[in-house]
Length: 232
Image 1: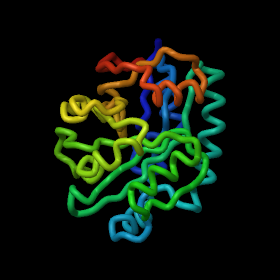
Image 2 (image 1 turned 120 degrees about the vertical axis):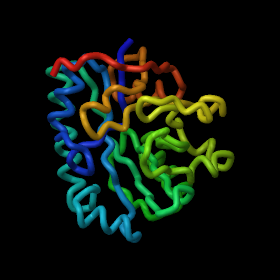
Image 3 (image 1 turned 30 degrees about the horizontal axis):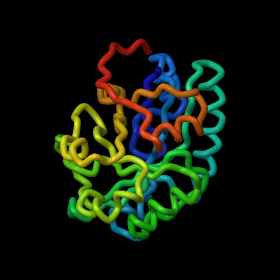
């Protein structure tokens, strides 16, 4: 069995650590798998345009470099730590209204996407890549920050369109998600080192990207709270 964290941000969006720094942090802590999931924001909205101007989002211009670095760092992560790195992004639809905001993780992605479409179309487009569509923090995160309730408000319509729903994206369990009998996943939504103290997914499968994605699809996983001293 090994620990996994499938929601992590780097300096390609609003994280404070570079991809190599993230690899070394998680590798030194003995994790078996992680996913880097930088924001990929809408391009047509005011907040999306602001993210581009502030260099807080993946774009058609920087996405090829992002994928090349993920590929090379995945090789190093395996050679140095026996850790799998899954390429990902977080499709980000931000609005002034929490009820109109939605974030969708794509795990195992290979192609750039435009985030301006409806969430149903985005989830299907992610899955058409052979990747997983994950509903990110769909209910209150119990933290003082902008919330993303749109997916949860449409959960009956969207239940079969997502491979998993985050039951935690940090240090708090989301009871509403837990009680809804949806497929689950737990991660940190890490932007800074201290956010490693959070719930994590626990897997018991081969350390191979497809085996990991299939374990999530088939819900062959558990989760637990991670609060261990950092060794790096």
